[in-house]
Structures are given as structure tokens and as C-alpha cells.
Length: 69
Image 1 (cartoon, rainbow, N blue to C red):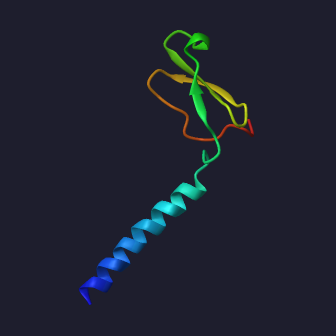
Image 2 (image 1 turned 135 degrees about the vertical axis):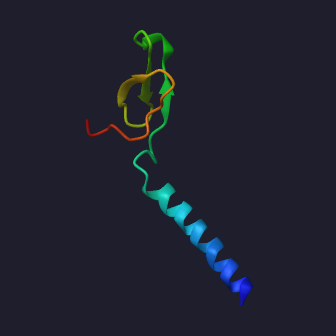
């Protein structure tokens, strides 16, 4: 019985991880930092998949796809 419980817990975590990875808004985006185009004190990123561009405070990275914007 304890083995079934442990297998259930492991299955829950594996399925939760898979669900999160397949539903995230950046699953197709490949963000690249372009330091030559970065404004002072900020980081400039562009996506090589959808072409979206954004600048963020230095040290942060994009977490969402910006293709609709």
C-alpha cells in the first residue's frame, strides 16, 4: 500500500511538471539578449521564433510570449 501511495505522489508531480511545460506562454519562444541594442541600465531581448522585441530592467528575462503585442 505505501508503494502505491508513493507512485501516486510521483505521478502527480510528473504530470504537474508536464502540464506546466506544455501550457506555458513561452513554450515556442527563444529569447536572445542583444547587448548592443540595450538602452542604458536595461537589457534588450528579441525572440528568434516570433520576432517579438522587448527591453527589461537589467538582470530580468522575458517570461511570456509577446507575439500578440
